Length: 415
Ligand SMILES: [Zn+2]
Image (cartoon, protein in one colour):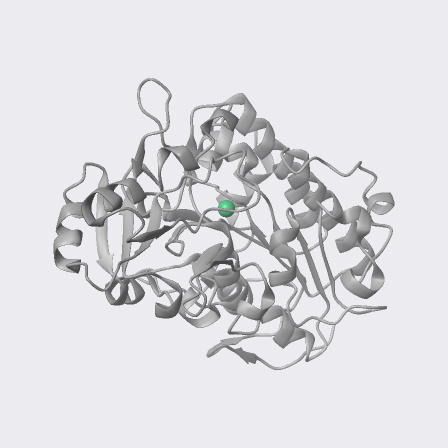
């Protein structure tokens, strides 16, 4: 491995990796998942790792959704810098809801593309293809180039588009269903194979939260998933890699005592207040894969008509049971580090078990097979920051964020 000097990316400086750095983003990994799995003895490697390495907690980005947080982790900065503040935003020019899963919406380079330009070898494996093109933005593929693919589309990976072909044969697993624990296992199985065959400088493995949406911490369904990850993490550790594990967001039960989703239908509330269709509620959790969360999360943004009395709307929404905070665009941008042009006039965050929907007829709750578990709010902000190394010289009072993962792994890890 070449010994190169530090690199500046998006205003932060990162040392060149002395050995492979593997950052794992465990989707929806509320800290209790690993805490309970370790207590219950199903993560023996992680238990040993945490005893000698690092067992920290940090805050994710709000909205506590997948894309804003994955992009924050790989750029080292919040959404106000990289631009991806959710899955959807309202295009001010067209008035249309636009899906933000295209690289053209990114406003900052990734840490990977900056290091690749200086000769680093990069491997990225993610679960769903919706994230793959964002994570791999700016990378160069082809022979001896970077590698970036999703387990979802692993059978279609090509040297030109993904830097690798024959992935399914290499991994030795069938391509898993997009709604399965195996979709995430495939990532780790591929990661271990590629660590052995390619020994990249950087590896980023980002899972899907299918399991966490269905299973609470400490349950059989959760523990078997975490036991699976533990086995692969042990293999990556044995290869001599620095491991840093964090999460894009936590996960909480979001249902009432009867097991029904505990929903505030915000579009309905605003229609009653301002007239039908006057305000537009955007749920940035909405994506093409809604089976496991019914497009219900704890964060919404609302565009108000010019005639609306914003102070009065804010006061009314703030008084709704289960609303944690209602912020103006400017307040939300400052507090959460969000781009002002991609959020509405108001940001509404629900607390604890509550989620925010548009109107009852626009959510197909029949698809939810288990009582709803979801995320998006401040209640899902605390996530793990774990490593097989200690972080030397780290200020104990520093407010750690999940997007400090590369800073910690490159600048503080004791190797
Ligand atoms: Zn997620």
